[in-house]
Length: 119
Length: 111
Image (cartoon, rainbow over all chains, first blue to last red; front, side, top):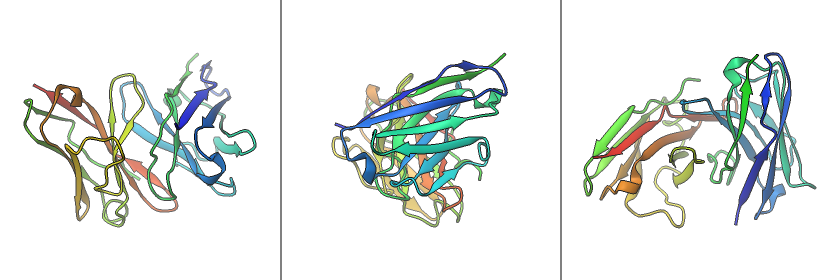
């Protein structure tokens, strides 16, 4: 059974930094690209970032480019999202998601971790 | 890259069929047969209902079906049931720069 467990969400001040983690199990993590998707309070889903299976290629939404960094450690079956220069509009639930094959939208999702940016 | 356009809400009575549209552009929906549909109940993670436009993952009811015409994808729910009441989102591959774009979301109400 595919399981994705996010952690690291917290209350952080504007301009601050935070690192999210996504621990994966139930599939061969190193064979699949992964993604982060967020959902602001009462809002829709927004794609944030994606990373190839090997970690050699990374992709970002314009809204986070230059501020967020996606990475992965295949030896630990874990993906990360380093977030810096956080803004109020980054407040959201951040979901970790598995990409079944490149270009196909995600198939399995974690339960999400809440990031709140406020002073 | 703008979000794909979905109706804000769709409603139907039990047993009826409803269709949710998802309109994009020639840069996303129109260029690729890579549209997925998700069901999201309040406080829960999205669940994949349709992928590659019309394919159902194992375990998803055959009451859910997908199609595409031009720049618009559609999700049809037939034999509407109370448990289908949820938010539904489409998502399309949008090229190597934007990668994925989601729809604005549709709230389905079972009357």
